[in-house]
Length: 418
Image (cartoon, rainbow, N blue to C red; front, side):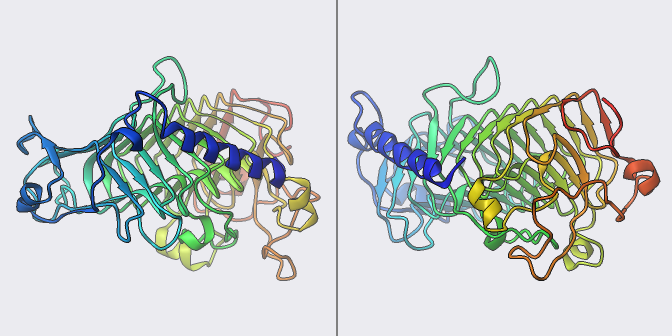
């Protein structure tokens, strides 16, 4: 997608999003009472915040916070620290808007069920939820058993139906989950979140400076579910898993990221990506990757392995003309790509077509200090050059990676016929 078309998409998204705030019958800003930023650090704060609209704080009757409209706050709009909480809560149909300046987020949930067992109910729900123009829409940190439900999950296929909770045009991204477990993210429309970053292709350093949050980002996350969401024009990545294991990413849709629609990297293992529909990633549809050997990130996080990539649809991935001309397109690009020494991954029964560089790719990064991105760039493609292995029987056995039953037109010659 050209930079011009991407800009048009963002402008249209902004106009449509702004118009939605004033649609008759909606529960957005026009019909929600205004409220100051909400800070909950103790059970007594639920009683003194003037923000609770129902419930008694028990798991069967959690405190209801919302609908409220919180605008242009010089702080996180809602921040809840669960370290000392015993009260359950639901954030319901909140409308949060900012000015895209400063480090302030929409909703921050920290230390919720910090011991890793479910003591309280913690949810962000509602198809009338709207978070726009903050730094990160929703941040969940060091928490467990949190549900983020935008209410728009499509029961008949991938992605969402209308209405759905909307998280749009936030500076770094829509939803960031860090150092957490048993988190569910479902039913959200996420558009035009994040900014084009400069990926670190050699060490795959997961820092936000390199990738941003984009649509949904998992960092240090286990046993969580990302299901039936839609990410459109969220950069640099629609859905990312860094140092995250045992998660399921299913039935999501994704389009138009600057880098990739899905990435699994930095010690991310035993994850399942299934039933997703994605296209028009500038470089990749789905990327499973390890850092190059002897890099600090590989030493810190270990290898990625035993991920299952099955029954996904990906298509039309590839760089714009400007990206090729500027030398920012890596030579190892493709539709569904396995990169460097990652091992024992299964790529089964997927579809990919019309992706620049190839539909099924097995490749290794080649550093180039003269390149604008630090690695050899496209064109030409650079595939079937893997010399790194962290397991799976080594290079001779394709590092134990298995490609089977996939529908694709351009398949690297080192990958078995499908």
